[in-house]
Amino acid sequence: MPTVHLPSALAGHSGGRRHLQVAGATVGKVLAALGQAHPGVGQRVLDEQGTLRRHVNVFVNGESIRYLDGVETPVADGDEVWILPAVSGG
Amino acid sequence: MSEQRSTDAEHLEVGSGDVLVAVGTMKGAFLFAGDPGRGTWRSGGPYFRGEQVYAIGFDGRGGRRRLLAGTEHGHWGPVVRWSDDLGRTWSDPPGGNLRFPEGTDASLARVWQLQPAGDDRPDTVFAGVEPAALFRSDDAGETFELVRGLWDHPHRPRWEPGGGGLCLHSVLVDPGDPDRMWIAISTGGVYRTENGGKRWQARNQGVRAVFLPDKYPEFGQCVHKIAPAGGRPDRLYLQSHWGLYRSDDAGDHWEDMANGVPSDFGFPMVAHPRDPDTAWIIPLDSDEFRCTPDGRARVYRTGDAGASWEALGDGLPERDAWLTVLRDGFGTDGLDPAGLYFGTRTGQLFASADEGGHWRALAEWLPPVVCVKAAVVP
Image (tube, rainbow over all chains, first blue to last red; front, side, top):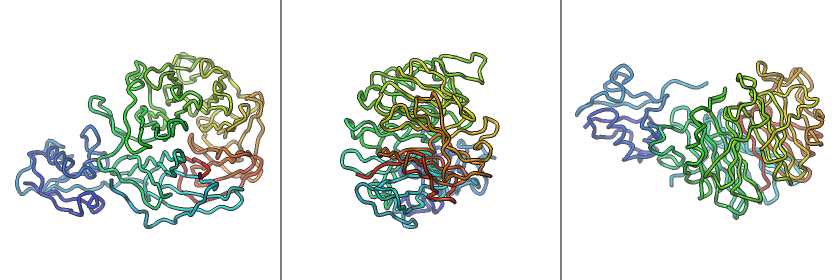
């Protein structure tokens, strides 16, 4: 299974765990499964239509999924999925 | 239910009869508590550090002392939170508690209004949100459901976002008939229901839309705020995007009442809690220059239902004051005499304990203020 790495801001919603093994063949499926297991994380990463929130970035093995296939980006055993807050605000 | 403890905020001790002023800003929320005479004040917060708080409210019905807040984290999205201990702990509902249901193809962008219903429905709270929709809670703000009657209105596809987004910002419940309500949308206009939200009718006759070819359409007006006149359920006041109006027939018709004001552009409108002829506005120079006219902070009051207006500025900045007060940045505590409170986008919070006759600053260096709600603690 891919490993999902959470930022510290979300660890309070995953029982304190920042590195989780989550099943799924694509980023979207991994995020959906993550949200099922940890609704507090899911709600903060995806909106109610399942769309990645605008200021949340996801990387697969170091590359932003914005430059891959978005949430359709395939993932496999051993892949590293990072969820990180984007630089934003004022 | 998860809880979040506000460990890094100053907390308030309040007693029955104290006045609580809740302030939402672009970077968190603050509380101010005044003694019953409103002579001395103390402050609490910040809560939700760094989050935008466009909706805040206090619910003192049914024996509770509940703060409600629509918070919006820049990364992690919006949610409605509540606190039953005046901010020491806040709910942190996992999975969110106000969500558009499947099939709507919509996602919550912002909570603009949290409005407890009347005393006869002490567990009901309404939420006005962006994209424009009304949600209802029957557990005092813990979970919400979409009001389908408005969402399915045939006008909805033609509502357009104003500068602040497509927001449902005002929710009024008739104190004598909880099934009669009004909402206002920018831009969409005023809608009224007579049957608890099942069906809604546009109620904008007489309200001008300067930005449309048809200046008096059935709907589509950029209404900035509506306020219910105290003691006269069929009277409403309205501040529009250019235009001040009064209706004496529950919104069926609106009459222009911009008589003797420096500008009829502005955002908030507050009605007196008991005198149906009295209301207050804070005019801004213009659509293009959304600051207090002539650099003078002035609240305007009518005591004759809009036939005339007087400027109130004692204690407010007389010069070099280019202030902006947004649609929910002005409120009353409902006391006698009515206390008034307004916050600015430049972080000042002003208060009057005598219906606008005299003003003082309660705070001068807050983050940009977007909403102000006042209430008496039961």
